[in-house]
Image (cartoon, rainbow, N blue to C red; front, top):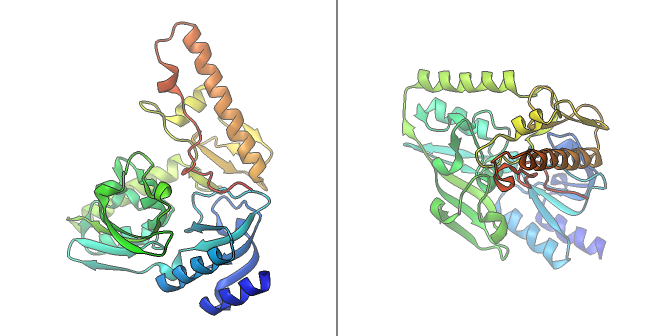
Amino acid sequence: MEQNFETCLYNVVDAAKIQKDEPMKKHTTFRIGGPADYFIMPSNEKELAETIRVCREFSIPIYIVGNGSNLLVGDKGFRGAIIQLYKSMGTFQVEGNQITAQAGCSLAQIANAALDAALTGFEFAAGIPGTLGGAVVMNAGAYGGEMKDVLTSVRVMTEEGEIMELPAEELGLGYRTSIIPEKRYIVLGAVISLTEGKKEEIKAQMDDLRQKRVSKQPLEYPSAGSTFKRPEGYFAGKLIQDSGLKGFTVGGAQVSEKHSGFVINKGNATAADVMELIRQVTAKVKFRDEIRNCNGNVRSREKYNFENDGRHGIFLCG
């Protein structure tokens, strides 16, 4: 069966675009992750559709990734096929005040294209280390901006291989969420609408936000970015810091001393280290809140509570 699957797979995707037993730590910004049985990089929508068809025909589990910036892959890897939509599906074009881009485009690419065209509105995303596909799925945002602010429409593929263009307002975009995972859509691309601006002002804002990231975030270490979902009305990093957990370490994983909302790979961390650290941090912050409430603090536990967000670091756990 395996040989038949591989034969069919090689008939739809060039052999150079298929890796077997590929260590996922090579493809995540966390630099953590065991081997995927198959790591496939289709070059276009047709190859993607055919790859998915073959995988389903042979009951091979699939998982779609971009550049791996929001992934924690389990130490045992992934039993199935990881399909990467990145550089081989990363083209874009600018027409008027709109940018049409494929899912594999990095947000930095799109931000620079907007800058070159003197289009404003996408500055917030310039430093987010992800691709357009993932950013749409989770409604990525930073510094007061979100993808829902600039999206006009999104091109998706259904489980059956049907391709649809969906208006942004039909995607249920909220704080780090959308209906895309629930519907099991695969994002192929999107149309982004911006407004005309002044190039020097756009560049100045991008430079300012870049400096804020460098000064406040632990960019010198591998991580999956901000790890915890912000509770309504609060900041996860501050809750963790106030609980005395800045610098808290499990194995090679650490709550960043620079920004407590980040879990970093301090050196040879495993997925198990990261998961255990997240479990302990979550439990300790919740316990601290329970004590505060018992002492008469008026904050409700529900409002103060936070938990690890699947779209903010934990995607694949083996």
